[in-house]
Amino acid sequence: RLALGWACWKTYLGRPEADAVRCGVLMVLGNALRLNDRPEEALPLFEASLALEQRYWSHDEENILTAQSNVSSCLADLGRLEEALVLY
Image (cartoon, rainbow, N blue to C red; front, side, top):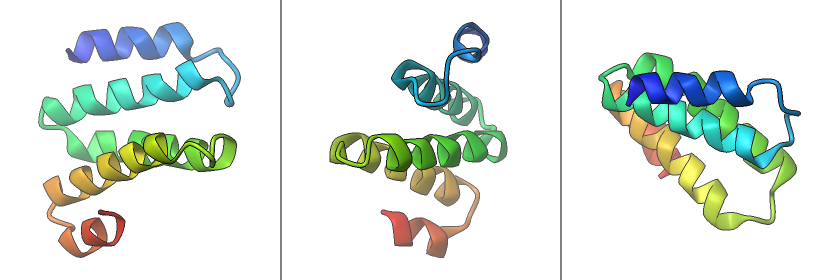
């Protein structure tokens, strides 16, 4: 899973910041890192994905909630429960 996440990121990295696929790939790589017990590396990707969702697709509540959930779950994995509860 991790190799696939990195491959996706390398493929879509050159797209514009506002490209929805590029934003989605941040979540793919973040999920791959988190599933491989690397939440400290996944967190910045999830935070970036959330920021992009809020900046470019603020009307898309479902994607914003998904991005918030990813950040929250990752924070919980890191033992930062109070921060996680604020988002969840």
